[in-house]
Amino acid sequence: MFEKAIQSYLKEKGHNKINLKAVLFDMDGVLFDSMKNHAKAWNKAMSLYGMNLSEEEAYMHEGRTGASTINIVCMRERGFNATEEEIKEIYQTKSDIFNSLPKAEPMPGAFTLLRNIKESGLQPVLVTGSGQLSLLDNLNHHFPNIFQKEYMVTAFDVKYGKPNPEPYLMGLKKAGINANEAVVVENAPLGVKAGVAAGIFTIAVNTGPLPNSALLDEGANLLFGSMQELADNWNILRNDLI
Ligand code: CA
Image (cartoon, rainbow, N blue to C red; front, side, top):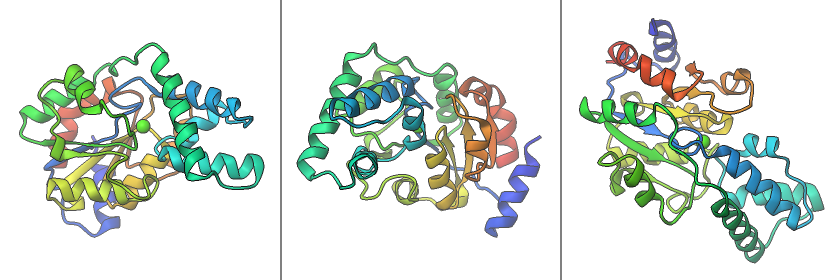
């Protein structure tokens, strides 16, 4: 069912097979239904500083580090970069607004998929641009016994962030594996771009308002309409992957 996508990945990257050992998960919009809140918070925070960043545009920046998003918008809206101080202040404002919104729920299907992956002996790895301090506690609360600190890449670990392949390459390194021994699960165009640039088979889940083409154009190897759909198809896909 998924052989065609797998064959074309192997051919393009020059691998004989995918020897699946780990699944690299993005967090916002994949494990948590949190993107609406992030988009709202970005829009409100930037408007407090007299700058325009629409909610729709926020989805196009999804995956970048906060600092990088702030710099891009500052440059466009007023013609010069933000200072370190300003970046800290704006990001804090955005985080405060985000934290004041109703807490995002886990994405339907996410825990089922994570449990299935863990129980079959594969290693779940988190690769997020998020810099939330309580991130691991929150993950453990909603997805107990799935994630471990040594298998997490967050905003604190990276210099460039997505769409640079850096975070996913670091995820591979933390798991001690090669690019053809993992798959990436991503919901954002820039996240897909990062996964593909890292040489990893990249599965897009379109959980937001963007058209499928936004994810496919960045090179997604497969696309599902939701995490539930990926969870429902996982056993078939895994059999094709190993
Ligand atoms: Ca995301």
